[in-house]
Amino acid sequence: MTSIWTKLGAAGLVAASLAAAAPASAQGYYGRGWSPGAAAAVGVLGGLAVGGAIAANSRPVYGPPPAYVPAYGPGLYEECYTVHRRVWVPGWGWDMRPRTVCE
Image (tube, rainbow, N blue to C red):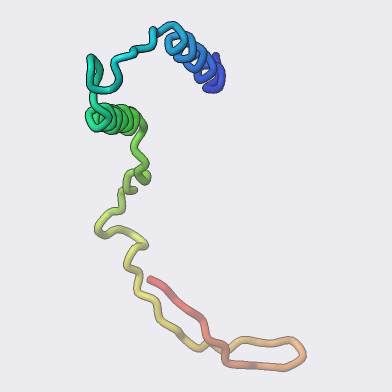
């Protein structure tokens, strides 16, 4: 698998060879070529088109799908309450301790 740097280097070499092989025009901007404003507009629109294509090709960054949670079920809506029980505490004696009971 080739890296992105290898591909960018190859594209740069191709672009440099094409630019070196193009003949220079002595007619200026308005003779046979485009005006500077038209060239800038084409460059901006081409950049937007390439950027849109790259953005459309990428994976969406969404969260995971929601987990299924039943509306009600065993253990979801348990009723809990606190009761006081008499317990033996070694070294102390009998004591009242709170306990949570869930049904």
